[in-house]
Image (cartoon, rainbow, N blue to C red; front, side, top):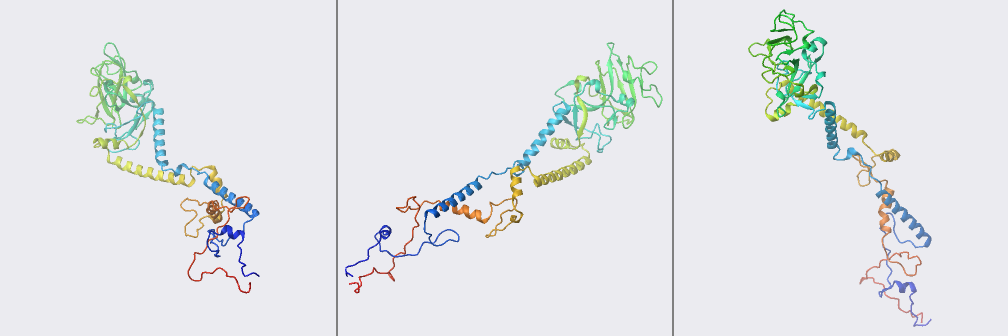
Length: 427
C-alpha cells in the first residue's frame, strides 16, 4: 500500500461535514414518551407514520370540535330568568283574570276586618285584593245574599272596589255593597231587592222605613233602616235625603261601627260618598293574596293597623316559599334541561372510567366536569403537533421526508480523538 494513502470520506460524510472534524456523537434523545434513539427512515414507515399522524390530528380536531352541550341550568342567568318569567306569567295571568290594570289593590285600613286580628280567608289590612271587572247586573248586594245564601269573605253579598264620587285620581275604597236603590224623578227611591225580606218593627224584621206603615219598597223617603247586618248583627240607618239624586249602591265596611253605640253600623253614604254609581266601580273582589301588601304599607309608613299575626303568617309563608324554591332548584339540577346528544354520550361512557384518577393526582370527572378521554388519546393529542413540526429535509429524498438531525458532541480538550495518521505498515 502507498504511504500516501489517506482515508477518503464518503459522500454522506461530505454532506454531513460542515468543515469540522468528523466526530461521532450519540443520537439526540427523542421527546416522545417511551421512545429513544433514531429510527431509520423508509417510505413504508413514512406512509404509516403519516397515516398515524393524520389520524391523531383528526382525533385532536374531533375532540376540539366536540360540541358543548348547553344546559339552561348551567347558566348564571338561569335563576334570574326563571324568576322573571314567573313574575311575567303571574302578572299576565292576573290581568287576563281581572280585566283590570293594575289587577290588585292593597287594603290600607282595617275597615273590612272582623275584629282587630288577622283572620285567614277574610279581608285584612295589608292584603292584596284582586279587582275583577264585572257588569253591575252581576253584583249581588248583602240583602240579596241574605235571600240566596250567597257569601264572600265571611258575609253575605259582594265586596266592591269603587272610586268615591267617581274621582279617578282618588284611592279606591273596598267595602261591601248592602243595597241597590233606584232613584225616582221626585227624589224618592225604589228598593225592589227588599221585597223578599220581612218588614216591620219586630225582632225578626229585616228592614223598616219612615213611610206610613213602616214598610214598602217603592217611593221610599226619609230614613231606611236595615237590621241584623254584618258579623256583629248591627242596624244600619240610611238617610235617603242626603245620599244624592242618582241610582247607586249603599256600601259599608264590615268593621265600621258607631263609636258611641256599637250596635249601629256606619254606611259610607253620605259620610264618604253619595250612592255608588255603577260607573264608579273599579271591580268586584275576586280572590286575594294575603299579608304581602303589608310591605308596601311598611315602606310608606302606614303599617300601624296591620295585625301582628299578619307579619308572623307572612314570615312563615316566605320561609315556605324559599324552601319550595330550593327543592325545585335541586330537582331541576338533578334532571336538568339537557341536550339529547349529551345524554347519549354519557350513556355510552363505561362505568369503570368514572372518577378515574390521573397520574398527577387530579381527577377526570369532578363536580360535573368530564375529562377528554383516556391516557392514550391524550398522548396522541400531545404528540400530533410535535410530529407536524417542520424540520430539515434531507437532500436526495424523493418525498422530502425530514431526516433526523444527529447532534454532535462539542469538542473538548481532553480525550478528543485525533485524525487517523498514515500507518507505517501501510507504506
